Image (cartoon, rainbow, N blue to C red):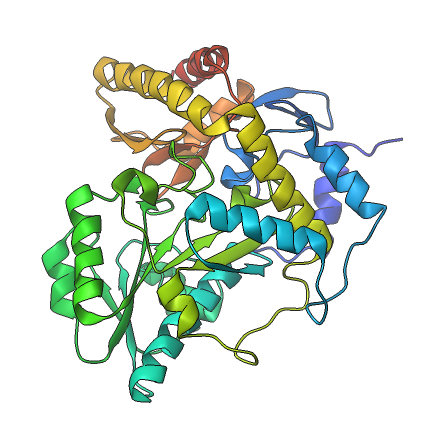
Length: 398
């Protein structure tokens, strides 16, 4: 017999370290774009496990690929080759137009590898041990010590100082601010193509192209964090492709495995030819056959079902409907975002309360920053799901 919700929550709080203030929901199963809790209540999912479940739940072909790999091999280590890792790497290289892939277990680990790549690239040129990286204010790149060091949020950083040194912060979408931080020690610049946790702020074309030009002028590596905005979410396989600005290093995770924990950092030819070498970096689990079977299946399913084109179509519809909300309600200041990565900035209304009331209406949404309602649904939603979301959200507003 299934335990009741209260008992499950009590047991979890008794055993799991309390680093999250979780909502009092116990989610049990999913189907399509809906989740169900242990009490049988249905929720339209516009959170997607924080932009992870791009294909929703039990998408045809996904489960079957994982089950087939379970029957073959789960893990071998990187001391040997395996076919799923080879296939997944080829597909990621093709989709990005880049050169080499290193698979990790998470987005945070992908950031760690990207930072090491930039520093090794510079070290090979001049053998200096004081290189610096420029990151952006209000950014988010992860919770490990290296990723946290380039996360421009004082509240996240303060309890864990001293952090990794040699980091300078510039203003996002302010090219002159970035230029002012460049010194003879600078080896790389890292930024999210679309800031996620910071409030859903897309980079401007002028800014992103300007940063790329600065990197080329000073021989720096441009690192673009596509962990949240990549894998089709912004209407292109990777958000930077809209701008035509290819990074030297790209990080991705979240929807890369659509539920299986996997990340990657991807290098262009320039970075791959003169950075990490045998012995410089490693991982026990990264690139194992099971995780890479998921990655390989995701790329196949995206291609077979036209997922990215679908995102552009439904994303335009969602954007238009959200713009109507902005015009209709003076407590919604603006909409920001691309494709199916959207944010509504509220003024004078606690966003946290709206999230809770939305849950009561059977809608899962999340926040970004202090006042932004974040909408990152599965990429397979239809226009009818946008309409359903708007009905539930509107009722939650009053």
